[in-house]
Length: 246
Image (tube, rainbow, N blue to C red; front, side, top):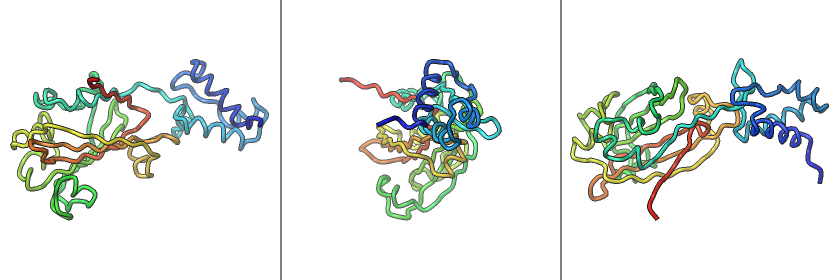
């Protein structure tokens, strides 16, 4: 079977990207340019560009055309960032990821709500029991990279700084420790999918960019659950590493 023309064009452009002829940030030839260069129909050129976008090699930005995706990853080391020596000393767990790159949090809200059914069991609560919910968006160098929603039992954290937008040095885990519920263990579940429309908008994702979903469960002494944190990450911006003994 012969290779479809759109695949041949995509293969050619991919080689140019991977060997550096089209550098990160460079403009990818437009649909009209491809039509003329390869003597193909507009639909063929459009499908070729769609292949590169689906592979995460390019991104379309409003007003600037399609460009080669730049990749300076956020290096996420789960063990290092969640160590008690990090948040226990008053540092944000985010400092472990960023190597001095500027970070900000916006769209932060903290509210008391009935616990969603999918979360209640993980926190050992009855359905609709009260929880404090911390919603926020994280930006690195001005670009949104992650959405996060944390759920904590209301009876455990009522009246503490956890119920305020700024929870103080060391964040939520440091405040839990002050309340006698210091996290002693974590479990994370990871999956990848394409974003929902509202996620793509909030993270300002280019077409074809997937998201990484991480759900973190935090446990205090005797395995008592103290937090569930649902995170949605721009997959194009992260490099993840897990280190463990044989």
